[in-house]
Image (cartoon, rainbow over all chains, first blue to last red):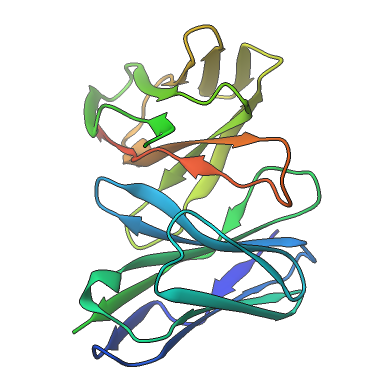
Length: 112
Length: 114
């Protein structure tokens, strides 16, 4: 079974803090994604990566950056957390030409 | 500009009856469609998919129908069970680009009443 693991289920951070969300997948997938889920808005793509050290902006990249130093790990960075970044963050991975993406359990981030 | 729309935020159905969840899309370049199911405090799990070369795909109690001319897809669950109560997201993907990204709808909360 594909496993996508996010480092934290719940996080509370203060406004202005630098926040790291970590994601690891064990299926040797080329593609990894970060989404955020907000009520009434569904899942919106923040950033994705199709190879080590390669990244592309999604639909809502402002205020975020990412890092992919190893194939299995994809990190989302909030450079200076703000209250409007309070959300559920979901990491996903997919392999080759397959479209189906496998999701982690999510990180509920609250910025106070 | 939402390219994938789920216009019903919620749906309630009696156990044993059919649940029909709907999804519309605007981008004619989408060629692959998926449904995901999500329980609270968990990540979405893949349910069923359909390629644009087909108009129906079935997997057990779940059937997805695609009407390309209307840019509409639907998920049928028969018979519905209380454990099906969850948020259902439809998603779409297109060829091209560096990776197959999924564009999601806003979700429909399905409640199956015992």
